[in-house]
Each structure stands twice: as structure tokens, then as C-alpha cells.
Amino acid sequence: MKSIAYAGLGAIWLVMPCGCGGDETPDADTSRASEFGFQTSVYTSQVEEGKRAYTTYCMGCHGEQGDGWGEAARFLHPPPRNFQTANFKFSSTRSGRLPTDDDLRRTITEGLKGSAMPGWDFLPPRTVTALISYIKTFSPKWVERKPAPRIPFVTDPYRKTDDKSEGIRRGEVIYHGYATCWTCHPSYVSKDRINDHLEAMQNPRRDAFRKGLFESEAKPNNEGEVIYPPDFRRDFVRSGADVEDLYRSIAAGITGTAMPTWIDSMEFDSPGEGGGLHIKQADIWAVAYYVQSLILERPAKFVDGVPPIRDRRQEIFPPGERPVRETPDEMDETPVLDEDFIEE
Image 1 (cartoon, rainbow, N blue to C red):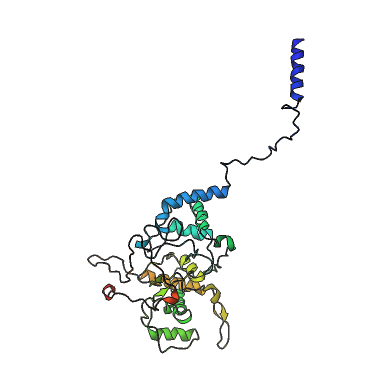
Image 2: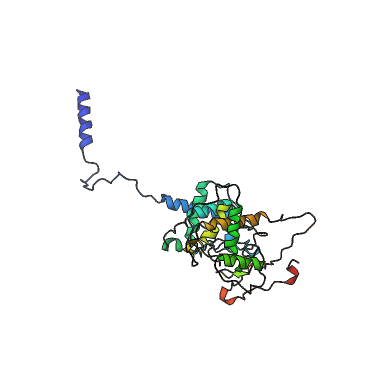
């Protein structure tokens, strides 16, 4: 009997309302997790992880505020990227557009040749993704603009052939006769041969050419820095010298510089007799193979017994002194170099 009584009391207790005073407040919704102060979204956690990685690996050059003026920046040329302006030079998107995440990932992991930007390929993919998320917090452009599409990668007509000489010859003609790359980069053929290539592209011959035709032409970028387009027989190509890397840089252009997006200017009908397609997008591959052939001709950077001479002097700024960069309109067309630093 006692057991039955105890069981009855337990049943009564289970059905009695909890609390005193007949509180009729409905039960809390426990179907979803509550928000606590220590909980953050996945994106916020990713940005915080990126900030920690940025502080460790990037801040010394790019600066705490992402403005490109870290403690080491005064000693570096080219200067570290300013993430606040979000002008990323090397991408698979058209010049002036924001890069893709894959573009940023490639630059972080592979670095930029001939600059102080190393390849951070030892970082885990998760850390690189977090760094990309944090870098985007420095500029409102990432919020204001839609993601830009990649430039098209047309079929490489020379990929399946072991002998690339046909593509190289075509690339030489396009380089000198159509794109006239020698207005910024050096010419690698004589003036007479340039005129032959101009005629082949149905352009008029020229009597006059720029001074220093066989050297790079100094150009200001959109941040007022004087830069030299690479001389492919002597300078590093920062974004890579594989033919795919060269195609991407030529086709997409280099943001903030005089290098335009060529993919949109490489397909039209010939104005000459017979018409027909005269220039095609696949010609960018020909230029890429030609440029790569020039890179392969480059002599060794260091020769025993011959000290390396840097003929493009850059100023180093004292600690705490931040220079005021001129705009391109305020600069002379060609910077004056100290003759003592010019290689004979």
C-alpha cells in the first residue's frame, strides 16, 4: 500500500505546474541554440583568425591598418600592397576590377617574384582563407562592388605541339606590330623589323621611335610610384613565368599600371582586301610563348667575379618619415636617375 501511495504522489508532482504563484509565462523555445556573449558567427571567427595570422605574417610590411606602411616598408621597392585602396595588380579579372579569392590565394601562397613578398605555401589552406577574409575588411570596395568575372581562357592552339616556334614567331609579330608593347617594354628587334611587323599587321610604318627603345620606359602607376615594365631578358616577372601565368597577365592587364586588358582588343576582322579574322584572342597565347622565350634567354643573375649593379636607385626613408606620394599628373614623364647608378 505504501508503494502505491508513493507512486501516486510522484504522478501528482509530475503534472503540477512548476513555480509558485501560478506563473503562466510560456516555456522558452529550446528548438534552436541560444545566443550567448561568447558565441560568434562563422564569418566573424574566420576574420578573427585572419587577423591573428595577418599580425604574425603580414603586418610588418603591409602595416597594422593595411595601408602598405609597416615598419619594413621604407626599405622595400616595390612597396607593399596598400589594401585600403584594393588595387591588386595581378589577377584573372579585367584591369581595375577586384580579384577573385583564387587570385589572392595564389599571390599569398606563391608570392611575387623579384619583390619582398614571399610565398607562404606552408600556411594551411584554412589560414589562407582566413587571411583573405581579413584583408577584405580594409577596403569598402569589397562591400560596394560585385565580384568580377574571370577573363576567358581561350584554347591554347600551341599546347599540343612540342615545337613552339610557330607561336613564338606569331608572338613576335603581335608584340611589335599590333600591340606595340615596345612603347613601355623594350623592343627586341631592330627598327626596320618593327616596321616589317607593323606592315604585316596592316599598320603604317614609322619614321620615329621613342628614346631608349631597347630599354624599359619608366611609368608612374596610379599611386604615384615610378615603375619599370619588366625587361623580359633581365627582370623578374612578378606574377610568374609559366605560359599560363603570362597569358593571364597579358589578357587581364595589370591594375593600376599602363598595362591594359588585352583580351577585349584581340578579335576583329581585317580591314584589308579579303577581310577575314586578322587578330584573334588565341594570339595572346602566341605573345605569352614569345615573352617566355625572351625570359629563357635571360643570363644568370649572378656571375662569379662580377658584382651585381642596381641601375634603378630607390630612396630609403628615415624611420618615422612617410613620403608624400605624387600623383601621376604631378610627376615628370621620365625620372632623373643618378648617372653613378646607371650601368654602362
